[in-house]
Structure formats: structure tokens, C-alpha cells
Amino acid sequence: NEFKLARLYYNHPNASLYEKTILNVNDVSDYLDQFYFATKLYYAVCLFHRRETLTDQEDEREMLLLNEINELKEKTIFENNKHVKIFGAFLDSYIKKDYSKHGLLKEVYFNNIELFSETEKHDIFLLLKTLFYENYMQGKSEFLSEIFKLNKFAVENNIILEDDVIANEIFRSIVQLGCAVREFEWVNSFIVKYKDKLDEEKREDVVQLCNAMLAFARGEFEKTLDHLLLVKFQDVLYGIIARCLTLQSYYELEDYEESFMNLTNAFSVFLSRNKMIAENVKKAALNFIQFSKRLFNQKFAPETNVLKIEKEILDCSVLLNKKWLTEKAKELSDKVK
Image 1 (cartoon, helix red, strand yellow):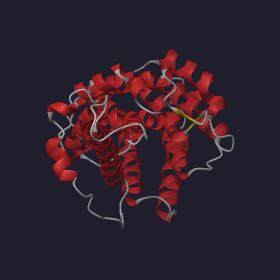
Image 2 (spheres, rainbow, N blue to C red):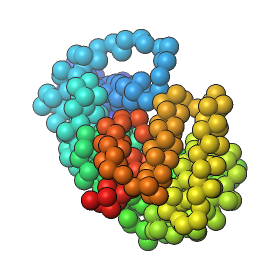
Image 3 (cartoon, rainbow, N blue to C red):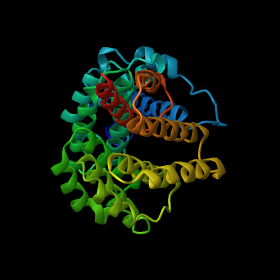
């Protein structure tokens, strides 16, 4: 908008090429650079993020002048341009696979939120979340708390809403993360306050699934099963999550041995037959079933090889609910000791 205003001023009939004016052609060019660099970096980051999260992208066109812009983004002229600063830092993270700029990115975002458009606020939220998650996957457990703080900031600033609607997956991930850091009261308040903002078609499924996740995190396993009974499995992903939670609840409760074993078999068949599930998700779920079954058997016939199972779980890179499985393996390991 500043560039457009400068161009209007420069092109005004009363402006002169030969007289000194408040704005001249160099000023218009500077405003254009500020806008162009910021916009080019923004779209580049969106493109890199898309390519990392979606496979088989057919459009691999080169983004012209990106290398030149990336090299020039540190020039003094851009030192006060928060868009260039934040999107430039994101681009560096993607290109160099270096996720250490999280502090700078969080500071620019939190302290200058009013400078970004609604779309930019939402996109930066997702980009920053991905960056924090990459740090967490590198073994930095404190980043779970950082993701929760980011989620909380997004909720408080209505960044999670688009056209007054919250995406089902964003809603679920916020609940899941809140449960992971044991912010149970906050999670419950979030569900109550924002459930009516969900898409009406799948609202009941999402709410019941999230209530089940909260109940499980609180150790209320019977209550977890009650909520899961109301999930209609309209979504394949939610079906996988619900089955995992059911299996975990059976594991935690007494007198559910037969139900546990029946579900492991039915769940494996469901995964094998469903062609809509991505192979990496299918593999992670099948690994979860196998490790759950092995740990469940160890509950009734504890042996020293539970230490071997614990190590296999830690070494497995494609695995759902790895944290829970590790905790259960350690519990059995401590009993053997």
C-alpha cells in the first residue's frame, strides 16, 4: 500500500520531473523494493513449506531472482522491514535445514503481530509451528512447551480462525499438544469455547475425539472409551487416532485382554485393506500395534527381554504414540528389575 501511494503521488498531474517534491522516483523505487522483496520471500517460503509437506509436486518451476533477493535481504534498507526479516529467516531455515532461528522468528511474530495481514498471521503460525516441531524431533523436549505457547498465542489473537471457522486438524492438534504438556484445564476451556467454530459436518466427531484425548491424558480410561463410542469414523485419520486411543485404554484397564487382542487384529486388517492411507502413516500405525501387543504380552509374562523391546521402540523412527510406548516399556522394565 505504501508503494501504491508513492506511485500515485509520483504520477499525479501536479507532480513534476524537474521540481523538487516530497517523493521522487528513487523513493518510489525504494517502496517497490520493500514490497517486492517481502512478497517474493513470503511466496518462496510458502512454496518450500508446501514441497516439504506434500509429495509428488508436478510444478517444479524455478522462482526467478530468489537467490539474488536472498543475498540482498540483509542490506540496511530492509532493517526495519519485519516481513523481509521473518520470511527471510524462514527461507534460510528451509534452505539450510537449520532451525535455530526460532527465537528471532518468535520475537518478530509476537511483537509485530499487527503488521501482518490475517492470511500472513495464519501462515506464519503454521510455519513457526513446523520449525518448533523440527527442533522437538531433534530431541529438544522443551519445544513441546514452546509449541503450546504458540498455540495459546494464536488462540488469544484469533489467528486460528479463518472466516470465523477453525480447521478440524488445527483444533485437534491444539488439544493434543495441550494434553501432552498437561494443561488440562486450558484444553477443556478451549474445547468448550471453540467447538461451535468447527465445521458442522464433522463437529461431533472432532469434539468427541478431543474429549477422549483429554480424558485419556487425565488417566480417565473408561471415560475415554465412552467418548470414543460416539465417534463415527467419518475421517480416516480420526479413525486411526480413535483406534489407537481405544487400544491404549484397553491396555491400561483391567479385564480387557480379549477386547485388546480382538482390536489389534481388526485394526491391522483395517490398515492393510484401506488404500486411502499413506504408506508412512500405515507403517507407523502397524508398528504401534505390534509394539503394543508385545508390551501387553509382557504384562502377563514379564521377561528380561522387555529391555530389548524398549530399545527397539526408541530406535524405531516410524511409530505412532512413541512417547506412550516408551513409558509403558519403562514401567515393565522397572518391574523386571
